Length: 295
Length: 295
Image (cartoon, rainbow over all chains, first blue to last red; front, side, top):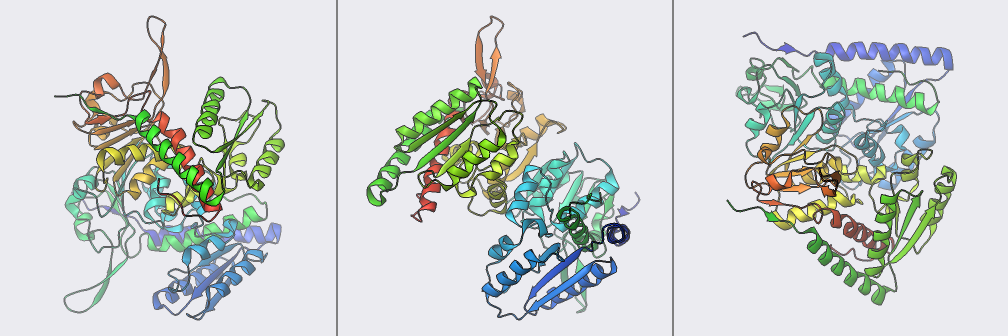
């Protein structure tokens, strides 16, 4: 049996960002509008700092404006809310992203609900969550949106396929399930309390793993030929002390059974930022009543 | 084998309405507050008129105030929206229900989004849909809420059980799936494009049928001993010309296989209105910053 096809998220996201850059150029030329993304970082979490820097870089590369707001870890909640109110009113800002997690003294839900839903490019505001669940035009969270793009690229139409989403987080698992229901998959949401998880996973034509547990899903849990989207990014230490990034799926085993699989890194990861830029472009078009590019 | 236990929605809802009436009495005595429900009916659809009359009767019986607004079928959308704005501002009104379907010239989604989310006792406003999906306190749609109450009454804790929801409507299927995920069931959403539906249904400890197709789900699709919640209410004509209400499940067959099943009528149906009153009581308590009764 041949190994699974590797789903190249680096390549796909690079092409997507090129397409977005062309749309940005066009919007600037024809309408004198430049999409702008504001990123708010509170505190000095090293992983968050890396993410935020990459977002800034990609935003600028796509020809968009990037507004970085870095606040000290002890910033009072009230100040964060005031900053967001300002960004809501700023005509140069079309997308607002607050880097999570926030320091413990700040109520994340309150901050998320303070963002103007039309600028909520992370898709976490209850209005956008609700619109997605109701099947109305919404800002869709970036990681599930990127995962769906990869699935459609590999499989074409998804209607009638059996999909299992392992994990029920608000950021990935639940919106992913909504998107797959909308695509007419038969969708099962599995999680830590699921009995016979291997058996549940083995039924699926599409497996989306989003649990945050290194290599939990084994090769012999998979239906031969299925498509695997591995959302997990886990840093593990090998016996010799070196560190390594692995997904939620045991890749070396899975690649021998699946029909197609995303590697970690280089699979879903790069799609998230590309979809953030995509959402910013869409938000900008809607706010300026321009045609929304189909990307 | 003995027949399935019948889940008596008439009895359960009557008890629930008694409990609600006691809370209403208490709220009136201790806080001089009377929960009020406003129902808006546009047009003369006979089924809607029956529902609305029953809602009015049950509201008054529970000791709540009932405000009926019946408008002619050709009422302009603008007038409906103005009426809702008035109800949003009316301190005597704690719950607002717009009877669906609305006449075709009125945009239902626009009307639903015009209702103050804190008075949205149907739970259809995107904010409430999103809060439910995010697992935050929300107004939960009445039919799935009533179905969940019956399930908990029969089964106790639901964690780890395999549940199948057949149907993916915004009113029943999708919110039902959210509620069951929150209860830690492994939830599969099936629908018209599902392949091998009998096999999917046969895996389930809990089957919720909400497709609106008379007796579609057969007895031999069920796992012996499972619990069946039949949300369907279909009016069919028998060969002799008489009319009869049936569910989405072939009851005569299913009752011989299931462990427990809701009849139609007398199962889920009466729970819907009881949950509407429950949501009105909860909305009233929240709006007046009183303790929210746990019902």
